[in-house]
Length: 399
Image (cartoon, rainbow, N blue to C red; front, side):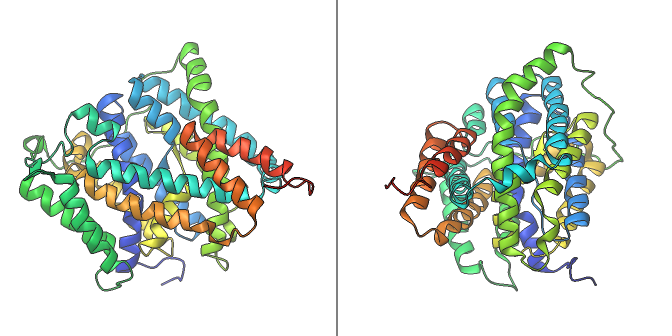
């Protein structure tokens, strides 16, 4: 067996690390924006497998959060999301294939990268807590903390807090346990809870078959759809993608895999995401990227090789091909609080990358990016952080 493709319990555990980011947003876009579950899950599965085959180290797959969050919050049409996928392809293929991303990357100070990583970590932690207490946007729309469980409270405590607290403590004890990997136990226990106490909504319609995605399932976007997607969805997304999914992700991958991570370059990440979004455009999937948060989570829970990508990619493909539109009935077995636990540990792992920042000016930039991100968005924090880091290189300035 190649050292690049291991299929151990730890690789299985690490492969589950992205679920906290993928599942809530994917389910939200299926239910609110009417995206096709088959297109989404087959797109995710193929992206995992092809990324693993090329990069040969564990590689994350995540939804593009700016586009996904806006889409769910406003209920825009599926065809507008589809149009955004094509725009993302065009922009990333130009930035990547021309080598422009290498020029951009050379001018990004390390303090800005750490600021993006810390900001992303804090956002993941916050979202994880919201999923546990029932205040994420999806849960608020459903007006229930655990929409797919029959039990909502144990005494005065919301069920999500009870499940999340127990599994969070369990994760702390098992985080470095190779015989009982934490993520496998957490997701496994969560699914058992879903089987025993779930609403089992849609289970009467579940049938095993063979389901393939349709080509352009929402039709061909109009000029207005493309204009809206560019201005409202894609332009705010691209700076965040370059900062988090390309530059911060490549930096983290090289930290984790100094021997084997050489393929995870700025150019390769741009082209990989571009091709994935081109595929999403044709099969009706969601906008996807590689994210530093997903990588931190996969690594923390035990993934070290591309075998983790083969495992989770295969799982996504099998359930999509076999269950088709009813795949949500399977996914909904995992309580939201379980996904919250995964996000909390992913966020903590990513946030701790700032430990190598020693100088006051560097830390100032990191903290500034976090503040701007929390007040506005990560794209703004990334761009302003670059400007401030450059200004602070002037020796006469101090903080």
